[in-house]
Image (cartoon, rainbow, N blue to C red; front, side):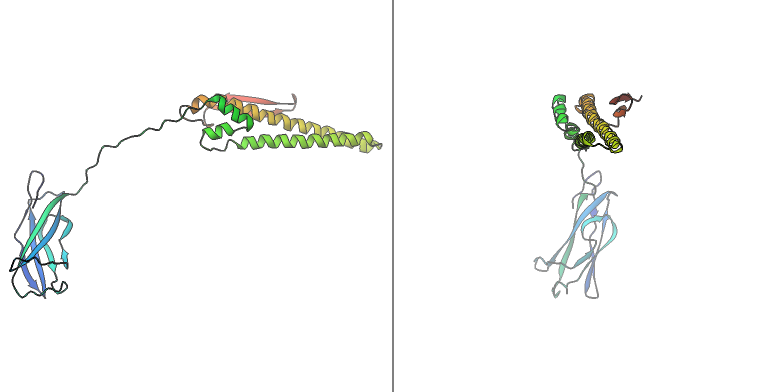
Length: 250
C-alpha cells in the first residue's frame, strides 16, 4: 500500500479458495527490497459491504513480513463463529516498515572530579592515618594503616606499663637471680615499647608524606599506589629509630 525508496512494492490480487472449511488466501509482494519488511492485514466484507471481523488468521499476516511470492494466509471462519452463507470480498493490505531502527549519534557526558585540598587530607590523616586517602579514593581501605598505627600505640603503652611494673619488682626483690630476670624483662619490655611507639610515629609520618606526594594526582586522575613511587618504613635496630624510605622506579 505504501512504499519507500527507489521502487514501490506492489501486492498482487489475492487468490482465494476453500479447503476443508478453511479459506486460503494467497498473494505476492513484488518489487521489494531485501531490507523491506511489511505490516500485512486482511480486510473482509460480506456481500452487503459490512465488515467481517476475522481473528483466526495464520500465516503471512501481521508484522515483520518479508516480501516475495506465494504468501499464504489461512482463515478459519468456524473458529470465529462466522457462517459463510453469502459471498464475501477479501482484500490484502501491506505497508512498508523499516527493518532497522534509526540510531542517533552517541552523546558523551564527562564527570569532572572534585578537587581535593591537600591540607584537608593531611588533617584527616593526622586524626587517623589513611583516612584522608580513603575519603579521596571512594572508600579504598587506606584507613587500615590507621588501625595499625593505633594498635602500635596501645601495644607500646601496655609494654611500657609492664616494663615499669617489672622494674618496680626488681627494686624490691632481694634474690639476685630473680632481680636479674626482672631487670632483663623490664629492659626488653621497655625496648619493645619504644619500637612500637616509633613504628606508630613512622606510620603517621609515612601517611602524611604519601598524602602530600599524591594530592596533586588525586585532583587529576586519582591516586594509586601502583605508580612508580614507593613509600615505606622499617625499624633500624642500630639507630633504634624507624627509617622512612622513598623510591621511584623508572
